[in-house]
Structures are given as C-alpha cells and as structure tokens.
Image 1 (cartoon, rainbow, N blue to C red):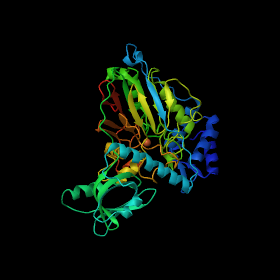
Image 2: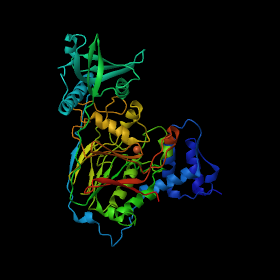
Image 3: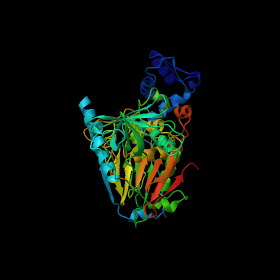
Image 4: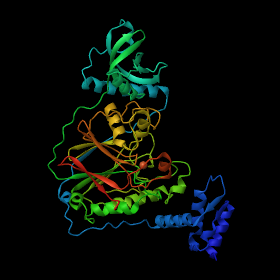
Length: 499
Ligand SMILES: [Fe+2]
C-alpha cells in the first residue's frame, strides 16, 4: 500500500501530467519532502513530448539529490598515518599565465580583426621557424610574376576543394589578395606524398608553400607548417610530480565516484600501489568538465544524478578538500562547466563555488599556461579536437594524441573556425606562441600519450563511464586513469584506479 505521503506526491504530480510507475508503491518518503520532490520531478520532465512516467530509480535519485543539497557528502579520504610524502617538504614553485578575457562585438569587423591577428602571429612563427626561400611580400605581388617562376607564399587557408580531375585546389588568403594552389594527384613519389600531406590541410590554418606559377595557379612543391622546434628535456632536481586528470562529470549518473575517491585515497597514502609516487605529487592539473552541468544537451536531465549545478560544484569542492594541502590544484573549465562556452573561457566563477577559497586551489582559464617547478604546461580542455578528427586523415577518437599533435604543428589550439565557439576578439589568444614542455588536453575521454619534437602530449581521459552517446558513436573511453609526470625523470607513469 502506498503511504499517505506518496499518495500526496502522486496527486501533486498528476496535476502536471506526470505519473508514478507501479514499482514506486513501496517507496518511503517523508511528508516534509513532498514539495521539493514534486518540484524537482516537474522540472526534470518539463518539455517531455510523451507521457511522463517516473520509475523507482528516478524517484530514488531525486531523493538522494535533495539529501545531498541539504548536507553535501563529506569525502573522508583514507589518510595513512605513516605516509611521509616527499612533496610535503618541498616548496611549491608555480606561475599561472592565464588567457586574457577576450571580448567581441560580433560584427564583421571583429571577425576580420580576429583573423588578421591569427595571420600576423602565425606568420611571425613561420618566419622565425624556417628560412622560406624568396618569400613573396604578399599575395597581391603574385600577379606581377611570370609563368614558370618559383615562388614561396604564405597565407590563411580559406577553402580546400577536390577538382574534377582528382587534384586538390586550396585557396590561400592574406590581407591583400588570394592565391590558388594546386596539388597534383599522383601515385608516383614524391608527388604522392605531397598530395597526402595536402589532404591534411584544414581551413583557417596559416601555412607557407613553395611552388611554380602556372597561369592563375601555383603548382605546389612543398608545404611548410609553422610546427615546433625540437625541445630539450627540462632538468628538474626536486623529486616532484604533476598529476593530470580531467572530465570527471560530477553530477552525471555515470561519474565513477568510488574510483575517484580511490584516487583521492591514493594521494593521501591510503592505497599501497605506487605509494611512493603518490607522495611526489605536488601539483594536479584538472583539465575541465569537472561537473556534468545542466542543459548542455537535450534531455540531459535523464542522465544526471544531481540536477542542481551548485550542488554539483559543492560535491566537486568536497572532493578537492580531500586533496592534501601541500598539493597545488589548477582547475580549468570545459564545455560542460558553468562558464561561457566561447574560448578562451574564463575561470569558473566564485559565485558557482560558493565563494570557496583555499590557497592551494587555483581556478584558471581555458586555455592556460602553467609553469610548475620549471615545467611549462599548456593546458586546454580540447573542444577543437572533434573538428580536427573530422578533418585530418589518420586522426581518430581512439588516439587523441594524434589530433593533439596536428594542433601543435599548426601552432593553434583551434585552427578550424566555426565548430567549437571562439571569441572573435582583437587578439587570437589560441595561437600557441610559447612551445610548452607538456601539452595537456581532455574532452575526448580517452587517455593518450606521446612525444612530438620533445613536447609531451597527453590526453588525461575521464572519470565518467561510457555514455549512450559514446556507444552510439562507437567511442570507447578509458576512465579512471591518472597520468603522473615525474619532473626529475621527465616522464609519465599512468596509474589505473579501476581495480
Ligand atoms: Fe568531458
């Protein structure tokens, strides 16, 4: 028999067209909670197009969520009393170079200025990086050159089209004019290799090419990307480590809380495996999507265990409180966090965080340069990775490090314009003007590690189980793996918290 309180809830919900399923009959609820439970369920089912039916599991989730809002969970990390972390006795040395807050009025002029800024900054990188033979002063001067002449030109890619006879036409643009580049389709070396390289050209990136003038076209011989110089490994004396994690998606039903608490226990010396390494952790970089957020995609409410954004952040802060105080934590926002979507994203605001403040916890912009014990880290959530994977042959969700390498070679965190949101401001702060020791991203929910020209490339994975959306797309995440960079050794160790 349903209790009187449950009957009252049924009556309230039915006024909003919501039914409780038969399995909820035996569910016990307090009379004082009816009002809140009803309003949460009504909120969840707002906009349902079919009959709204609430099952036992959903009802239990809502009750749990309300309990959390009243008294948020306190995370008691297991602290091993004889744990003597070396990092506790080493002074922190860090600096934060945040992205400036960019503004735009969204006019055509602001887009023009934005692209000019990109062209100027990457032109400077290309000029510094390579000796470009006989670089034409600009694209307008091409018109004065005679047919058959060798030229080197530079500009932004405005279009890439496959021609009828199988060649590739790429339009290059600068402030003065445009140039039509032709890449001949061929199965013979070296033209075949060049054609393959040309397939990787993406719109809005800045490149240089050498080639020969042929009528209105330039028949390309080589492509020069801005790229990065070979970087020497930094020597760090102190035996400290940087832990990289991202994409916890707290508030999602699929947030793997038990394993995340195991990571926190590990930091506190409460897990035997790789305990010595745990004691070296002096810094943690959290690369965004710390919470699942609300209203990020249609019907997200069905996938949430906590529908209140403030409660999601309160839970996150409870976890952060369990990190030892000698560890400095740097938190970036991602596309699920409660900040503007357009990049650069400012740090998560204090309003969201209930004015939380701790000396060792730093909320930073996305992207952000961090110098941690001399190691330069460029941290970026990675929203642009989707467009790179779509556009560049060989890049897949299974190997995030490949797409990250393509980004590094282009010296721009989001080379293709128009997929992920970007603020078209006067200054393109997504240009990678400083080459880091570690390029760190998240977003793809899959760990990936490699090294390109001495730059460590790391995708820090996730703490969220595989979502229905990922099943649909065939993506296989790698949850609950933390990547730990030991500064003195100059290399990573991955620690798996799945067992
Ligand atoms: Fe994510």
